Length: 399
Image (cartoon, rainbow, N blue to C red; front, side, top):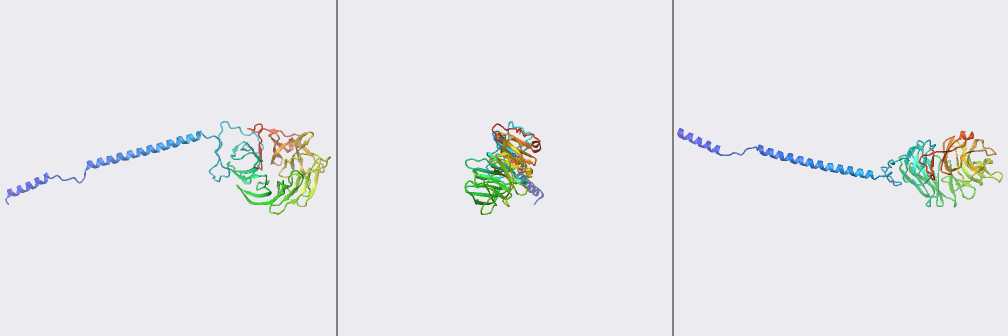
């Protein structure tokens, strides 16, 4: 092939190669467009998600505000509800009553526990109360309900306000001085059980005569009044198969026990003696001392100091009903009783061996200082904030 023919063939080959369009291995413009579309979709999705979250939060906030705006008082607590999350919230009041100024003891007023410092704790579910006693080791308190057509109830109220029912429909309920045991009459039987936390354990029973009622604990025994219309008591040791009669069948009431186990009771006297106090030994069935002279009330109201030195009872001074203070260490053949204040009604609470508080027949709270009474100064009612005419506060013993 000639030189000019070779050059022509090369030129023709190169011209054909230039005329053919080769596809690019990468498309920068397409990649940029696709990246922009992905970014736009991500931003749109994030915006929608943020809108949904904001809508939910705003709706929840409005619902919370609506719920709070309609709440009045503490939430309802079902008695005996084991759900510990159902604790009552502190009650909200537009104009709460001021703290109780100088209240001598804890008390329950209109379903609210008021301590000696004036702090108030609502007890939802507790009805009309008759007595209350502190549980040991700060475990709350036991509240005995007032009698109704359905009987009495027993509640346990914990320190945070949670209330549970332990008994319902009992004819009579008696608490041990340390609140570790409870006795009650139900039907034709007398029951005793231990109190542990919010439960009754180890229940035992015994059949008792019609009308018999538990009066109080004497150690681990239960003193039983056989017939409320006549004098006479018996003792029952829980687990025993029968009652043991107290020989002094003229016993009208029993106020408590001395540290040595002897009982302090009111017994019937003759027409000149009036009523008398007697010290009874339940172990030897022996009447040790019988002191007569003062006219004691047969209502059975009263109680002894923890050290067994003092007894506060109702009696008559002249023509007036008064509370009387008796020094049990000076108990002789003559009953020397000192007028202490207005007649008491219901339970009493010894806050120390020389201070006792009670509610009088008008519903007023009375504090008795033993030394002042012995010096001739009778006790007067003390003010209780929030106490209205007709209200009857219930003192908490064992405080």
